[in-house]
Length: 305
Image (cartoon, rainbow, N blue to C red; front, side, top):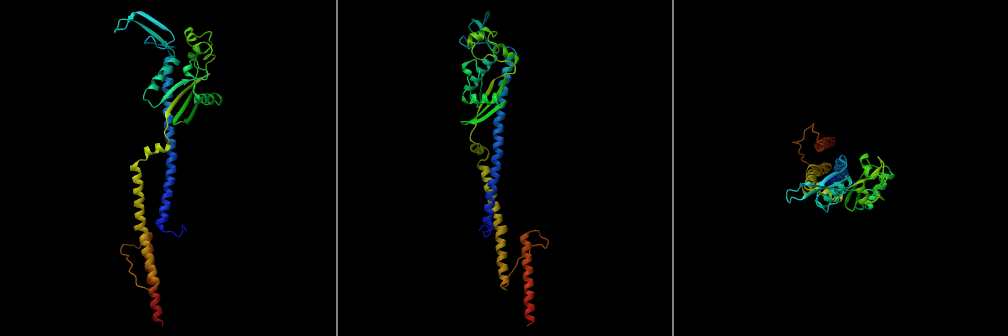
């Protein structure tokens, strides 16, 4: 049935199939680019968090001037240092890397930033750092399978986890609870968050990014203008097939039929070169030669009577 259909119909079917193949390739490329970009953003966020933690670690702790109700490990008061606004003695509060990173994550969580993060572990010290269900799964995968990263699309979010390893500066607080700083054990107890050695998996940096469905993301790339250009391309090709191929073939077919009946036919060959590479032009020349040969044959037949 397809072989007996018109060229226009076959062209339309093949054009649609070509668009489907191109669309499939576009989908695969877009999928790779989209998820690679999400991974790049997640890794960038994890890099920044890790760098911030290392900055705090190089000092052991950082001391900040804050309100009295702030969360801290220890406190220092300097009576000879006063706040310029109210002339009151200034207190400084210490924060270790884990506490500083968690407070950083809380600030980011309340901000308009699309990427959120937190530090968590299966052996957490602070209950606020307890992992959620997905983070528990990520921790198990990283520790049991020896992975450095764990990635999953879940509930419209791109979830990314990266392994964190204990350095020597971490063991002071997370090694033997008997030798841990007293303010740490007083604040968090001695049951959880200890027993680590240098090189042990401390936990993960858990990053979360919005991940809209790929079909919706594709519309951000393929908009009305691009769709309009595809339609325009189809219309142009359709018009070419109709006026440049199908219509001339129908005319040549009709002329060949008339020639077969011995009827006079006017073939317009004024624009056709003998050396033309146009297949339709060569077909017209062949039909013209066929007509000439038939005219000669008919004349010879009449002369031989």
